[in-house]
Length: 295
Image (cartoon, rainbow, N blue to C red; front, side):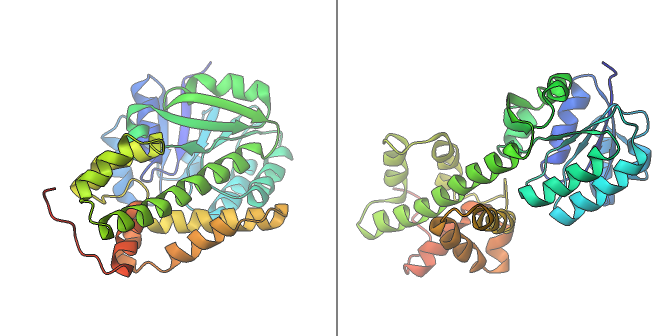
């Protein structure tokens, strides 16, 4: 397989994923509309390009990591006109199945293989190559791209030929959002009951509810560190997609709708922090301040 690939969209999680490919020996041509992201990319082994069309020149596999559904649809139409028919487009963004299907239609008309490949995990997991990627699209293309996918993910799960990966990503993110909301209420209730901040975190880590996500968030919570791995604003966007996908599929989703209203109630400062800042939102509503620094 040719080792030349392209990566379009070098944002908070796209850049470390692309950097993993560069460190694995792939020749990565990258593009982003943000000049600072391009500067950072150039320090991570990525050859920066002046445009998306320049980045994809000579690439047999093109990755995209985009912020919105509109960006995906517009770029897919542009790439459909620019890429040769033997190209594989690996699309890693979090978007709904309807927008993804529009991208698929544009690419299919030009014979370009389209892999929906959203990821599950944080920036830290992207940096260490420990993401999980859900993939749907032509299985032969998945197998051809699997070595590249493995550069930034510990597991690559093929789910079908169409939009299955989009539904998988939204379903997982629904559980992530609800878990964050439950943590906020759980911690506030425990503190109101006289349990110290550190003690309740210790308890949760040893209890039946200690999922990998809960365990991952315990240490930042101990430090009251809300540096974003994914922002509240980003999760609000994802919940919008989840609620709409559920509506279109005829699936009742009251928990998703509730969490969407919760995240929409965040002020701009909280929305810019990690999505687990919903903990602080619940504390404020409960009349709780910052917990003491020691148990």
